[in-house]
Amino acid sequence: MTGYETHLYIFNLAIADLCVVITLPVWVVSLIQHNQWHMGEITCKITHLIFSINLYSSIFFLACMSVDRYLSVAYFTNSSNRKKKIIRRCICILVWLLAFSASLPDTYYLKTVSSNNETYCRPVYPEESFKEWLIGMELISVVLGFLIPFPVIAVFYFLLAKTISASSDQERKSNGKIIFSYVVVFLICWLPYHIAVLLDIFYSLHFIPFSCQMENFLYATLHITQCFSLVHCCVNPILYSFINRNYRYELMKAFIFKYSAKTGLTKLIDASRVSEAEYSALEQNAK
Image (cartoon, rainbow, N blue to C red; front, top):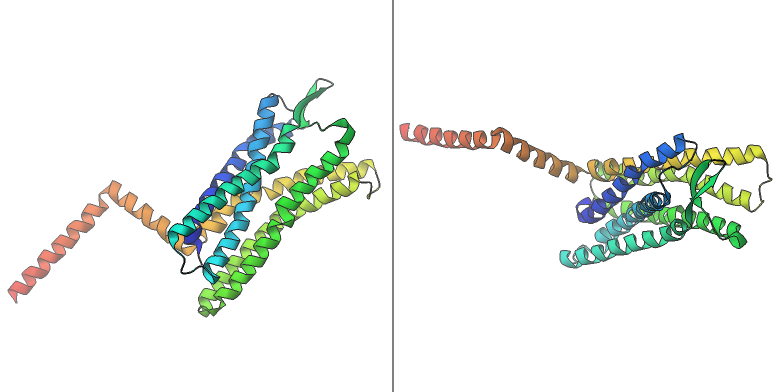
């Protein structure tokens, strides 16, 4: 596997996932208070912007990693590392800019709306085209969050699995399981939410008959599936780092050296090596 070549993507992915997780307590507090918002309009916008940017970028980085890993194995094995690093840095910058651009319109229209002594943080689109804006934002989230990234991830990891199939049976089996887990976990975490969003779009377009039961069902389903989808941000560090054998080895080595430096184990090892050398020299002289 080429995990060691994608450290830059993993680092940016970790930042994005961490920022998403940091905003979760704010949304949990709002959810407990029946979606009411008591933290002001600026906090409403900033929290949503941070959440949205990092959620999009997390998904985009996963897609970039799948493409990068395949191309590194199949075509660019002899390319210079410096050139690869420059390209990856440029891609990371573009990913953050794209995520920011995708998050900006919805954040711009976010406002704190008050009614019956209750305040909510929600988008207030232009009245003359409210439905178009609502459907448009939901379509953008489905297209950028699933319809484009998932096929990219699935196709390029499938191609990567075929490319590395020439390796030994045990290694191929191990790599195949890891690649399969990447695709399946993404699908399981994100498919239910985007199906719920598509159902909400069809409901807004009156393709699904109006009823209070359906409205309550969609409301609950969107919240539950979105919460479930965020599990992916917590699974990513395990899936893309700790499951990688090279990363585990480097982490273990770093821990051992840090621990040995603090406890004096390094000096003890060095002293034992000196003692062993002296003993061997004395033994040879005795002979």
